[in-house]
Amino acid sequence: MTPVVQLYWIRTVLGIIAGALSAIVAFLMGNMTGIDTLVDSFTIALIIYLLSYYILKPVFQNKIEKQSKILSTGVAMYFFAWLPFFVLFFTLIKIYA
Picture 1: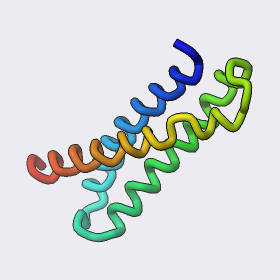
Picture 2: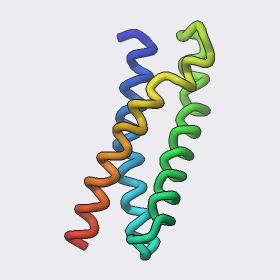
Picture 3: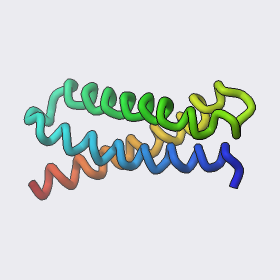
């Protein structure tokens, strides 16, 4: 696999993990019906994405020619993975907890 493809799949898996973490935090915060829940969950996902950039930048710095690709690769897939898994885990927690 090329480094760009590796970065893409790492971000996809991180999106799924961020969805689960966001759902857990939303449940623990209490008020699960307000817009604050969605905003806080999105903020958690954004923080995880930015942390992944700073963690993965030294790893892929010499492997990817354009440094801006490290930030932009997989951003859409990250959030497209985060959203359905956030909804899935949030619904499961709300039903079974």
